[in-house]
Structures are given as structure tokens and as C-alpha cells.
Picture 1 (tube, rainbow, N blue to C red):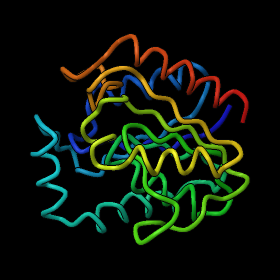
Picture 2: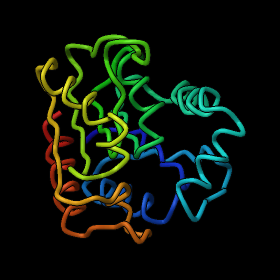
Picture 3: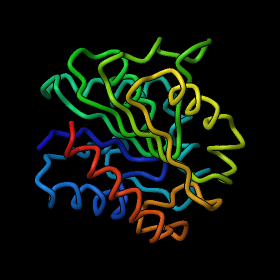
Picture 4: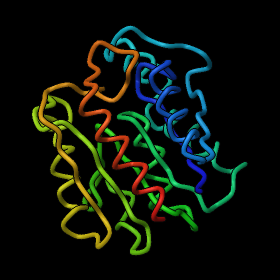
Length: 193
């Protein structure tokens, strides 16, 4: 069993994020779900992004990074969309990472936006929908493909559809079939690391 630090998306720590964390807990894993928004949730992605922008993307990312200071080093870092920012930074820069799970988003490992190269000993899974206008349209899929091509223990999983938060059971964008497959793949990943 592993310990996971799971970051929520731009709509906040929704019941769907908590339900996903509970599924991992039921499999015997320890899952931390910090609330970076101090109890706020938002009805839409634009509303959540406006809140993040008001505080600052860098500050919000660093809030997540600082949370890890009070936790062991040998964590799996996971994030949904906006939550990928702190999760991926920690997976790439904090010594001892056991793995990374990146949902609906991905940052490049080369170029101006990169935290640097991906560590050789950190396995990663990336999950997104193949027609998601954010994941595909904003270039996250290109970053995901770069990781999948360059990192030995990396897997990119694309699901048919155009929803961004398809794994959050509390939102209208939820896709039960895709989410079930994502959860199965995540549990298999956690069981082998």
C-alpha cells in the first residue's frame, strides 16, 4: 500500500474528488486530499480559474507544494487538472517520489514551462479524453506524449470523449465508463509501485 497526495481541480475539493480518494482508500492506500481553496467550490471551471488568478497561479501551486513539507518523501503525487501543477512539480523535484498520476492535464518536461526533465525512477500515468478542448486544444496532450516517449515507465491513456473533468462523479461532465477504467488503471499502478 502506498501514500498518495491528491490535489483537486479548479472547481475545488468536490464530493467527486473525495469519492475518488475514498475508492483508493478502500483499496488500502492512504490518501491526503488537501483543500487549496479553504472550503470554496465553484460551479464552473471559469469561476474556479478566476479565483486562482486572483490569488495567482504560482502562489496556488506553491500552496500545494508546501503541503508536502509535513508529509513523508515517498509519496505518489496525483492531481486533477489544476492540481497537476503542484503534483507534477513535486513528482519531478522532490526526492523520494514513488510515482505520479496526472489527470486531465500535463506540463511539458522541456522548454520554458518545464520543471526540468522527468526523474528516471518515477513512474507516471497520464489520463485525458481524446477530444477534450482543454487537454487536447491547449497542448497538454503534446506534453503528455513527450513524457510517454521519453520516460521509461510512463503511460498515456486517452479515453473517447470531449469532457475535461470526466472522472469527477459530482459534476455533469462525469463519464462513468471512462472513470471506471481510469480508476482500475490507477489501482493497478498503485499496486505495482
